[in-house]
Amino acid sequence: MRILIVDDEPAIRKTTRIAVEAVGHTTAEAPNALRALKAIDEDAFDAVFLDLKLGADDGLDVLAKLLQAQPALAVVMFTAYANIATAVEAMRRGAFDFLPKPFTPDQIRAVLAKIEKARVLEARVRSLENQLASESPPVDLESAEPGTQRAIEIAFKAAASSANMLILGPSGTGKSILAREIHRRSAQRDAAFVTVSCPSLSRELLESELFGHVKGSFTGAVADTFGKVAAADGGTLFLDEIGEMPLGIQPKLLRLLQEREYERVGEARPRRANVRVIAATNRPLADEVKAGRFREDLFYRLNVISLALPGLRDRPGDLARLAESYRRFFAARLGKKIGAFAPDVAAAFAAYRWPGNLRELRNVIERAVILAEGETIELADLPEEFGAKADPALVVGARVTLDALETEHIRKILTSARSLDEAARILGIDPATLYRKRQKLGLL
Image (cartoon, rainbow, N blue to C red; front, side, top):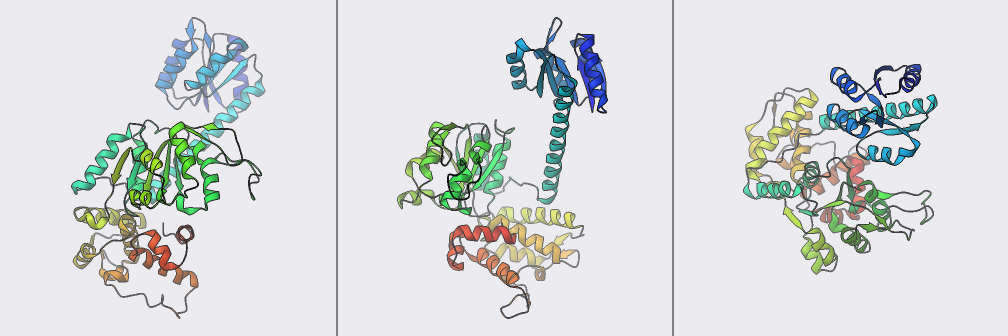
C-alpha cells in the first residue's frame, strides 16, 4: 500500500516510516496540513497516519479535508492518551482507527494488517456485486400502465422518509426489487438491507432469525446470535410475505415498530434498533385482519405508505418491453445471437395469463434462449403451456430421476396456481416446505 504519514514531529514520522516500510509498503511524509493536502492532491494513497494535534492545525479539520479529497482513504489518527475521547470522535467522523502515543512498531503493523484485511473484503464485496449484476437482468422500474407507474412514483417519493412501507401484490411482481430500490434511494442507503422470508421457517426459528437468541435458549442454540434486526440496525429490514408471519411473533414486531426495542430469545434485557421496515405480501392484509390472522394494530403500523404492484397480465403495455429486455440480457449472458421473437411467440405471450408474473417471464425467456437453435425464439422453445410440444422425457414412467419429475411438477403447479398458498395446498405440503423446495430446485 501507499501510506502518507502526517505529523509535525520528525521522530514520529521516522519511527512510523521504518515500521511501515519494514512490512513492504511505500511511504510519503508531510509535516503539516498544507503539505498533506498537497500530497493527496498529487498522488493516490491507500492510508494516512494523521496526528490529532498537528501544530496549529486541528487534525479533525484535516481529516475532513482528506476524506473529501479521497473518500476511500483509511485514516488512522495519532493521539496522546489524554485525547482518546477526541480520537473516538474522529472515528465517528470517518477515521479508520486511532493509535495512542507512544505507540510501538507492532501496533503500527497491526493496524496496517487491519487496513489490508478491510481492503480485501471491500474488493470481494465489489467482485460479488459485479458478479450479481452480471447474473441478474437490469432492474426495470418504468411502466406504460398508469396504475403501475403511480405506485412506483409513490414508492420513490416516500423513499427519502423513514416511514414504514407496505408493498402489496401477487408473487413474482417485483416487490423485493422495488424494496431494494427504495432502500437505495433512502437516507439508510449506506447501511444494510436485510431480508427475512416469513414463510420459510417455523415460528420458533423465525423468531430467532429476526431477534436473535442466547446460547441454550432452545435445543440447537449452541451459541449466541444477534439476529437480522441487529444486522439491519441503521438500515432497512425487508419482511417478505409478512402475511404469513405467525400471530405469536406479531406483538414483538409491533414493539419494535413502536418503541424501537426488542429482546433476543431467552434474554430478558431489552435491546434497541433503529430500522426502517418495508413489508411485502401477496395476501390482502385487511382481510387477514378481519379473519383474525393478522393483528390490526400491526397492520396500521405497517400501512403508513401502502402501494400495490399489479400482476403482469394487468400490464399489457409493458409485456413486450420487459420480454425484449430479458431476451437481450440472457442472449448476451449466454453468448448467443438471438435477435427477436417469432410472431407466434409474441401472440402467445399476449394471450397467456402469466400467473407467475415477472419471475415467470424471466424464467420462460431464459429457458427459451437456452433452447433456441437459431437467431429467433420460436414457439417450440417455450414451455408446453404456451402451445409447444411437451418434453416426452418428463412423464410419469419415463426413465428420468424423481428430482426431474418433482421439479417439473412443482414448476407447473406454481405456474397455474393463483398464490403460493394454493400451490402448497395442491401439492399437499405446507408453505415453508414449498419455499425450501423452490429454493433447492432453483425456482425462486
